[in-house]
Image (cartoon, rainbow, N blue to C red; front, top):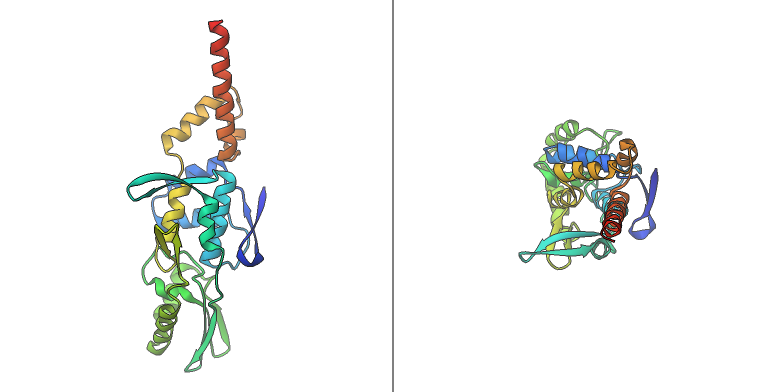
Amino acid sequence: MYLTFTLPRGKEVVTEEFLYKDIKELFQDTTLSNKVKVLEKFIVTKDLNAVEKFIALLKLRQKCINSAVTLTLDGRDIEIGIDAILQSFEEIINIREQRTINDITVVLDYPSRFCVDSDNVLSVIHTIELEDQKIDLSSVPDDEFLQITNSLPGDVLTLIYEFVEKRKDALTFNLLDKMYLNFLDASPFIFLNSIFECLDDYKFREYLFILSRRMRDINFLLNCTLVEIYDYIELYRRESEEEKQKLKN
């Protein structure tokens, strides 16, 4: 099933549902770079920057898992609605620039990928054009991205660092006046990973075990969203309490 969400400035993004079975795939992967691939595969719409992907995944989490998250702020665990988090992303300014130096034209913008590896500053390069050859860095594999960016001349690198310094405030978002997410480092994806890894392996199996007593089709349960699983768990507990009361009476 596909879901459609509206981003700031009216842009629509299509995603696949995040299902109960997908939770296990996420916590089985151990590296951040692998977890990025797991979550990004749910985004159907192409050519999004990292900020747009972040918002789309927040909305997906809200729809398929829970409308609130528990964050540790000032040493305390606090439940925060995802709508409150999304307020920090209501105004996203246009920072795209095209610059040319020594016959090399670069388009600079928000990173097109989540930065979980080294040398993240270069992720602001959207496209490079040289001698009538235009390369879209948002669509090349990671190894090719590194190969291209490592070969850039010093004056182009200087131009990029100047852009990042000028736009550093736009690249950082303040959540609830308590937490800063800088899209030139791993903090946005670490945050996403923490709120999608909502169950551990034990709890994942426990819910299946409990519900399989009433619903024999495990595949049906695996293809539910966690929101639906929580509803079924609540219905099961309510039914169990009613049966206990009948036995007492």
